[in-house]
Length: 507
Image (cartoon, rainbow, N blue to C red; front, top):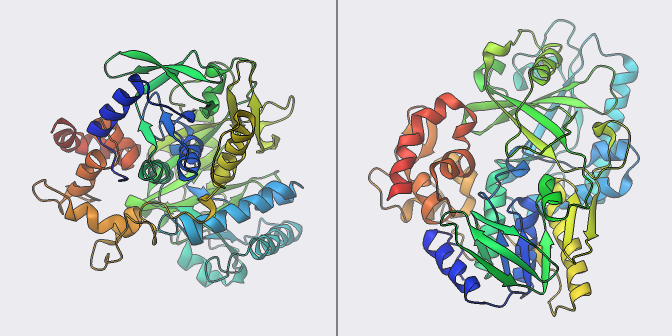
């Protein structure tokens, strides 16, 4: 089948379900975990539908650090299992399933006079352990270079605003960086559609049991019941809405957005130890669209779960104060051009700081028969999907092929049937976001001036807005601006492009 998602396919798929189309698996939740489950199920030959109340990547999955972590932090805390799995999953993404979306990111820890010898030794030991994890996972140094010490001059070249006074070089290591987390969700969901999955955004689920749910089209208000042999709850921090017996402990991670010029247009992520903490850092990461993201926090977020979390002034002050300890300039709130926050769906383990709560995931069977997957981290989405689906297959007696997702290229990756190897000569920004699918973005455009930027100074072209609607399931201006592209993270940029996005949504 095609990976194309559009309004017409959504309407047809909804109608088929309303008419009683058989389902092996119903997945509730359109974040990275839900999309991963849909892909795993469809690629095993199961009939599957994914329903999402809002848009793909509406929740936590678009508010991460855009990193594919190798698990070093978890190794330092003694959690060898999750550390090794993270390194393995990072290697799978970087070399097999999504090499077009995940690249090596240099991380620079500047060796400043304020950093004691023991602290330097601890970071260096950690980086060497990270090298060991990479080798254990079978990831080549050609994909993720080895860590090393560099000179003060080289450190300043990578991070031009680093404090020069007392700079004694730096420690450099590498981790995986996503061009964008929401693009990964979209690619996984579209690859699931390519294998026959029904991907239904703006479709809510209620009254879920182990074999049924009531679906409501949020755009028309129409509701109907569906039957499935297995129902999987992958709604993240909202999981208790489906199964009230679940106990989660959300924590808020906040990032600030800067014009990259404020950091001197860095080419490495400036990595600053948090004073008084072991194995916790603040990162200033160079990103697409000429931006730097500074993050991140780990704050308790009790109470009702908001649809979109908001950064607090205390978190903003903390991030600025921490990064300024390593800068030769002083950044203030006036330099911040955007901010975002996401909620981690941590499993409630009782007392202690959320920063110390395990990032392990859990599969929980409710009294109603719904299977819920909670906890976990973006890097391990594929493993988590396989885990919960294996459980569903065993419990429900589903006939399915073995898991294929370790070696299944996503749309845009070399080897995917919908990819094209002739991306030469196209804008680098387009290739970074679409990989081998980039030629199709322009080739299938029908709009006037497809190669023109959507606004001066923004390297997103009009053809990308059209493709978001015609192939990537975008139904609203917000879908286009806030999730298929990330222009909306900066409100001033958002205001400049909403009218252009409206041209494509309305057409």
